[in-house]
Image 1 (cartoon, rainbow over the protein chains, first blue to last red):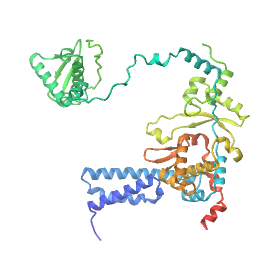
Image 2: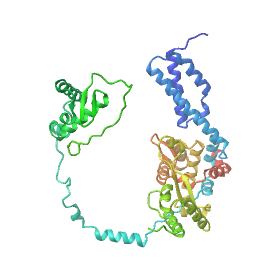
Image 3: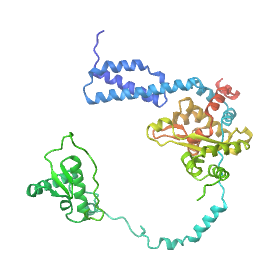
Image 4: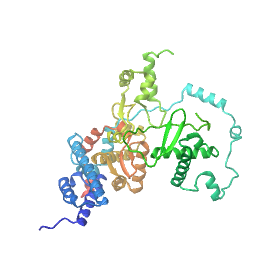
Length: 260
Length: 191
């Protein structure tokens, strides 16, 4: 028989291996249930056929699963070579047939209970008393605190969501494009643009939005930031090459809305 | 501030290890180092000598498995005080566990150890349920998880919990289980 391996057969074989490996991982089968040599041979047989991304991913997943099974086989050998026991199936059979008293005795023979004390001390009582003395009455403590009582749920309109920032008028990428276009326009008119002149427009909220957008544009390499006596921005035609560039973070505080 | 004397450190170590303050008993190694100074291991060794007289011991164990450490889970040893010897079956009531619950715990731990430390919860419950009934087995597994003898992972697998690592000599348990002869009643069941 000189039947050539087919894609369909290969996918089926690999899926079967993955399913078996998963069953072993969930301790349904003994790790030695799977013949690893055969599984690896199967992988090698079908590997030259894989061209699609999904098939290559299936192949990689199978290799990963097989490595987990190999680890479990190793653990099983270590376990069996230790004094703990022989075959897990034999032990399970044994404990299934053992009586309640024998099992309890076996547990007690190996149990060293932890000693814990729960006890009040004079010091803890004193601390508690001090706290109690300084604790204001409940009514006084909640006075002035905003509570939800009396407020019923209200319907949020589109304007509320826009105002609170849950929804945005435009997508972030198009917002970035708008900011970049604006920077290109100003650069064309007067050359390097002052960072603070460019960012501080509108209220504080708008400044934060613009600073956020500029930080993205600089990170993407669409804008070059120069930090000398003042911070200037220059738009680039395209992202810079990797050669000769050093990436670093440059924190700019907007806390007070003041220039540094 | 003056450095506490050695006997004071010894007393402090006893207080720190014996009195319960969090969910888990005992203290982490770094906490003990901060409280007792660089020679904390010497202090613990001497405390252990004192506790021997009462059949107690200072015991340290690794809380996190090596495999979990590789996945970035923070490790570290925890120290606590535990009974050095074991309890006779007549005193088992002191543990707060009924005999049949202790048997179920032995069964569960035996099953987990024989499967390299993990088993599916449904399978453990099914096996326990054969002798105890379905509902009892479910509540018992919950109780074992609550007490820290076993832990449940996200995918429904059960594994050994921190209290098992602290209290149970697994080699001794497995040896006892292997040497346990099948009982007459179980023999009758198989007939």
